[in-house]
Image (cartoon, rainbow over all chains, first blue to last red; front, side):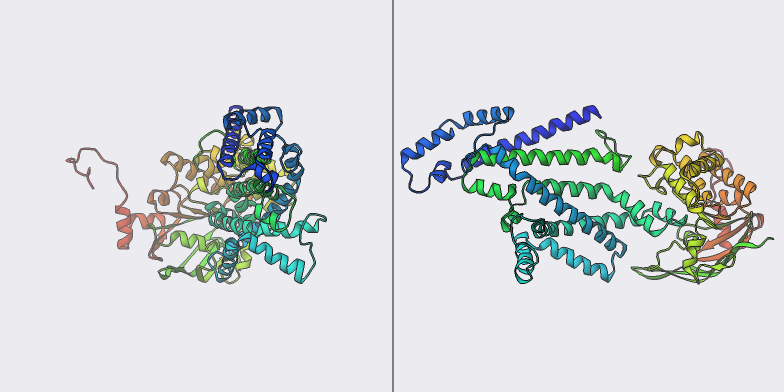
Length: 311
Length: 274
């Protein structure tokens, strides 16, 4: 267990390192000049040179990279060009908004998708399930910018019951969280359905039914517990990916999270801010993933961490 | 003969499959009295397991159509399927075919056995139910019973699991056990132990047993009466000695002839080759 944990921690650090290194190189390969973006269209060549020197962009890429790595170790990720304050602070200020949105979205997803998937599994291959299937496939096919705008139109404009943007009140959380959750509900409910359908016909369930266990206990205590590993894995993975910023939805709803931050950082070629965002969100994502993996033995006693599993 | 625990009259089961409707069980009748073992024997696909599942009401509602009657005492569960809730676990319990897949892999033995105990006696505290669980495991000769409660199914052997499943079946204090090929997934040496246990339990409690098997050796060892099943019907029924020693139906004779006989390896010696 101890060596497994060390190995997984090492893997996580390596994943984050490779991610930020790739991003470091890619943003410098992409067209566009941070100095020009910062100075605006009226800047002279001298202005640009001065700004480049101030940002440290006159040094070689290798030199910049080494300075960046050194900065990570000392907790200094540079100063954001556009915010003119430490990049890490800017990201950490926005992060709680994204975490709140992701938590709300994953909560809605779980509360809706799990019972929906169970309902579909219990009516597997009936006309009613077909109806639910059409709905979930529609949910899966709708782009989030479109469903977001539709929700906005209906609940903020036509029937103005919820705020259209920002996070001034808790009501502002509803529309963005629901928009993010729609796609996730479609995906997760179909996963729950297939896992449950498998477990609802498993021999152990028939035997439990034969000794008088109630249908409710059969579904929730037996089949659901046995379906939990793939479902928890999927929820964890979806949650981790939401932490990287739910970019489109944050932009549609002017949500002050890291998703809209990264869009602004990219527009202004704010290298330190892009790097800080990627570092923080990547670290969070691998942490969530690690926690999900560590939870496996709690969900299924046959899983021993660090050992190959024979199903 | 005492009053029947189970009385099956003209039971028919039609299964709805992709290829059409199949009559898997075609008008079988039998009864089981207290302390009696009745065996339904037949090859794969003969309808013997479908008969057992129909008796327990475990065939899926939308895929199986039942007619006839299945009476436990005075309750006909074909006419009133809701009565199955009263019957299952309390009057009749199932001993499944493959013990390795018959328990939830993510719950402990103690949890599943304890649940079965409390289904019958909801008034028991957790501790009392645990004590009863240990008692039941002792009854089926599971060594170090208390220790096994904390273990998971994958940590036990097939033979031990079948004993645990018998203990779980007994937790509801049923009067009848339906044993659906209870030994076919087990090693031969373990099989004998499980059959001996069932006979011992029958001796001490007077429980009735409906045994489903394809194994004539098993049938001969445990049965009072045998029904030979083929294509959904009983082709021959009777006392075990009568059926085995003086089979009247051609199919029974073939079934008996199919039992391998131990003989010398040398094929030249008469009787060595069959």
